[in-house]
Length: 331
Image (cartoon, rainbow, N blue to C red):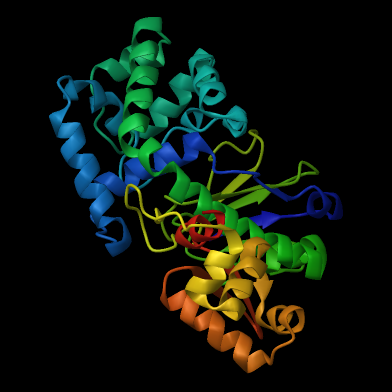
């Protein structure tokens, strides 16, 4: 179990990342790609990416990258720099600038339980040629495994952020932390990650915590090993039906919301519009002047059609758009 200790200042400085973190998504996707867990929502993605990597004329270029990211256990902290919150290129630049002592430390820890290729020794010395090779392979892998699916990844993270924003509005920072159940428990200033593979404590010491919602995070949240780095906790989001290139694409209607109303019916079209920023069943009923039962029924129809996703939190159900629902609404 991982226990994260908060002071009152830490609680106030806790926030949710504004968008998917490109380096975390890349690294975590490598773990899922190589792992034994055949999650149904990612099967098509795994087959497609595996085929693409095998077809690469220089498939050997991924050997070091794959070795640095085993399917289970530790992986180097330097691969997910805090700077990547500013984008993929900023993250790559931070990887290139990793101090040699940190490279050596991270790779030494990794080598304790994993066999590494000979190029890892040169990487530990910070040799520019090997570092360029690593960052080039990250760029190429991202173009194959991440970039084609980025809109879906963004939509899933945006839906999760809507949930966390609602929790913050309703309960403040502590409500936000409490909303992370059931995989995490919040009580008395301590956030417990229940199924964490190691027994660890992390004291924030006034630095706050960056919560990073991640599409490719498996069931258990992830934290950096080095307690001196900016505190980050990466946690899984609802994958909204999985990945498919072009998923969510719809034929463009002839005109605006009137066409949407003609397609879905005026009430269901209004439910879809109201769910754009997240909306509970009760709020739908109040906004549309219909009964709660009717609001729930319309939301169920839209959910079954893949246009909405619903998350229950105690006695409240929050409805948000799926990528397909957003495509229909924006068409």
